[in-house]
Image (cartoon, rainbow, N blue to C red; front, side, top):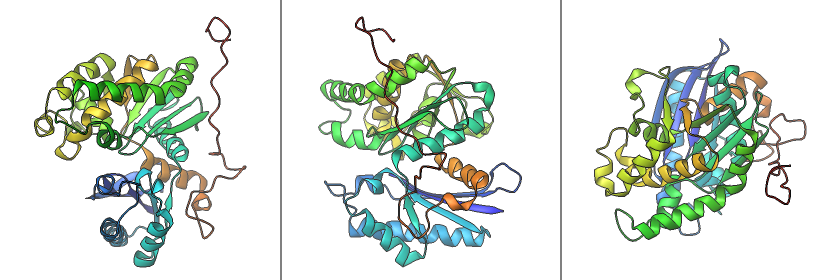
Length: 343
C-alpha cells in the first residue's frame, strides 16, 4: 500500500510518500513548499488571507502530487502554527473546501507521542528507556517511555522560530541581555519536564527535527549525503561551543556554517539555546540524532493500527478516546521530601 503524509508546519508544507506493505515505511518521494507561515501570522496568531491562500495552494499541490504517485491514502495534518491560530476552524474549513483534503490538527502531546513512536522504531529496543526531544518552529515536544509508546509526553511553547521572534527583537546578532532573557524563559518552561526526565534516568536520549539535525552537523556529525543509516550523535559540550559561535554572527553569516541552511539561520541560535538548556537540565551529556519524526510516526501508526484512528467526520482534531493507546496524561513529577531529594 502506498500512503502519503502532508505536514503543514511553521516553516514548510511537506509531503512524504511511502510504501507500507512490507511492515516498514519505505520512502518513495518527498517534496516541500516553503511558506514560513509563522513569520506571517498576525500578532494574535491569526492566519491572514494571503497566508491561507498560499497554504491552500501548497496542500492542493501536495494532493495532486500524491495522486501522481498513486498514493491510495492521504493523511494531512497541521502542527503548532495552525494549532495556535484563533481562526483555526476557518483555516481547516477553507483547506477542505478548496482542495477536498481533510486536514486535522495534531495536539502537541499527540505530536510528541507519534514522534516517540517513530524514534522507538528507529532506535530499537536496545535503546532501553528512551527520552525524545523534537523542536519545531512553534513548539518543543518532549516524551519518555520504556515501551512502544511513551509513559508521558508534553508540548511546550519553545519553538525555535517562535522564540526568535519573541526575544531577538533589537539587533542582529542579538544582545547578551536578549540571550540571557531567552535562557531564563527556557529554563522556566522546561523545569518540570526536565525534572521528570532526569528522575527517569533514560538510557538513551534522542533528538529529531531539521533544527536538531542542522545543529548536530554544526557540532561535527556526518553530513546528510552519508545517508540516514550513518550513526549521528551530538555532545552537549559541542552544542555549548556552537552557541558561542552562532551568538557572535549575524544571520547572513550563520548560513555559511556547515549544516546551517539559509532559511533556518535566523532561528538556529534560539534552537541551540533550547537544545543545550534541555540537555543540561536533563543531565544528558550526549544525544543520538534520529532521522524519523512525526511524519514517520503517523505512517507507522497508520500501518500498525489501521485508518480508524485518523479523524473522520466528527472533528478537526485527532481524537483521543479512553480506549486509544495514545491517550496519555502528563504525569506529575515524583514528590520531594523536605531535604529536596526524591522520595
